[in-house]
Image (spheres, rainbow, N blue to C red):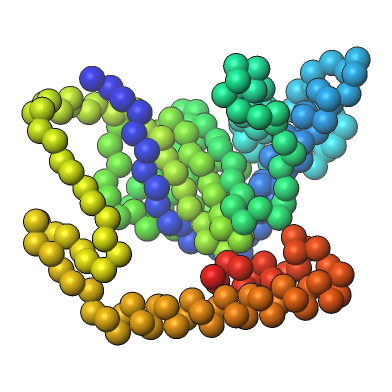
Amino acid sequence: MKELKGYRFRIYPDEIQRKFFIETFGCVRFTYNQLLMRRQEPGMEKATPAQLKQEHPFLKETDSLALANAQRNLERAFRNYYNGRAGYPKLKSKKNSWQSYTTNNQKGTVQLADNYLKLPKLKELVVVDQHREVKGEIKSATISAKHSQEFYVSLLCLEEIPPLKKTGEVVKLTFNPHELISMNQKLVLPDFCQKKIDQKIVQAERKLACRKKAARIKKVHLKDAKNYQKQKRVV
């Protein structure tokens, strides 16, 4: 039976590829926001990425499939809203720590082989840390980045997956912050590890409180306080 299965790998783009990814994130975000704002204006017809390209030529330089997927994501967001599954769609912000875009595989435009990844609009292959074998046909690839520093690719593949037999057995999982359980054997965590972590957390939270106070003195909103946001990620 064929099913969709996802794989996620760390990728290491060079400077040119990194710049292309960041620009594509911006174009996809711009397209999504423009389509959303035009739907909010009374009397305005639904716009398309093709129409936006005529008005904003810089969109022609990016992956057209990424822009088309931005439109599909917006349509999905509205369907979820109208069906009561989610709130009203919001504008995407460039301040989000994670940015991403999705492209589709059309006749081999997305390929993975020998720890290299081929993507549309990129002449050079991207280095990828392929720690497991990918089976089946690649349907789409999502490029994501954390703070524009760490880059990842998520591949959605259609492959043959044998169904698992139902055993009827029940597995019970419990959480204990002081112990690890492996093969029904309890492994006690060393006290010094926990103490070290607790000390680091206290120090980081104290530093975060100082930066919060400094932002308030300067009358800067915490969203725009770069030092506060940086320390918040550390915490």
